[in-house]
Image (cartoon, rainbow, N blue to C red):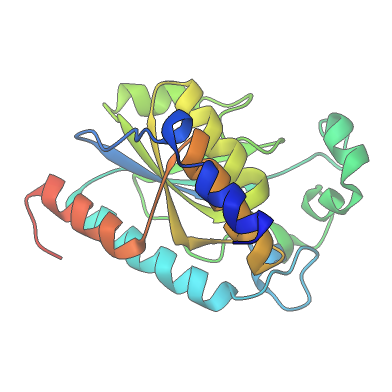
Length: 216
């Protein structure tokens, strides 16, 4: 057994063996699924995004048919990046989302529908500095499915903050991506050990369908 394999095994022994499980009313938070990540020439282009978009679209459809909330987040800054704080200093590429930059970079790849929740944020977590927690609590949500980009960044921050706000985070692995498969998998392992449950798309679909009283 390699050191990496051993670390993965240890992370799910007694101290890290719990599950947050599912409640009765889930919402799906699609984190920053914009063209800057999906386009081959995008500022933050990631590999394997076609499959991620397809999986996300599938789960969005299931959630929509079940009547559960869907949340879309994006990142926006003013033209001077004055609202980016030290995040903008640390990641200069975030200027792609500033007012005056080419609009396509920050545009959502999949289109929201009336009734969906839109959240514009300045930092990694979809909860930090936004009304998301109160919006979800008001809607009776107790479980959040999390997908989007990137696994190690805004997805991780959102899932962790979901737990902090009293929601049951379920990270749907096929709806996330990162700069490399290794980074993606290592962060999913760590999230699953400490801050969220990580599930496959088929499990998420089955759970949502069961909660809505539907099949498929």
